[in-house]
Amino acid sequence: MSLLLFAMVYPLVVNAVMTVRYNVYMNDKIQHFIVGFGLSLTGVILFPLILLGFVFGIGKELYDYTSGRGVADWQDMVATFCGAVFASMIVIILHI
Image (cartoon, rainbow, N blue to C red; front, side):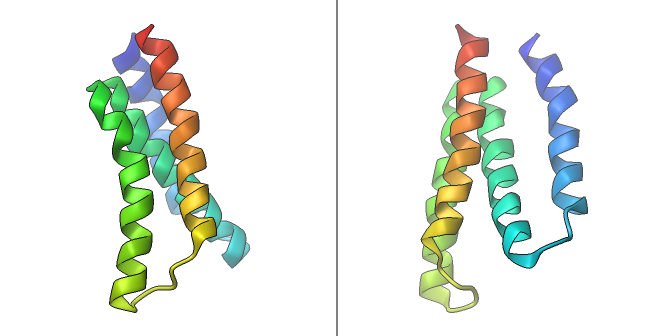
């Protein structure tokens, strides 16, 4: 059942990442939310993977800060964490 739900939702998440192209600021936050959601949703397959969204949120902003290639923004990390928390709630409910 969990794998079926993952198989149904994951392509929608990937499609949303590829098609959201409107407001640059909102687009960035939506992309962070979707990536955090998609990564933590992998916890459906193997529960510890639920942490991927959180690890990515921190890692991406640390990379932006140290490399200078991007702009480190705490709001990006919050958006990624929000997606990860939402997916984590779904995964935890499915695992109960």
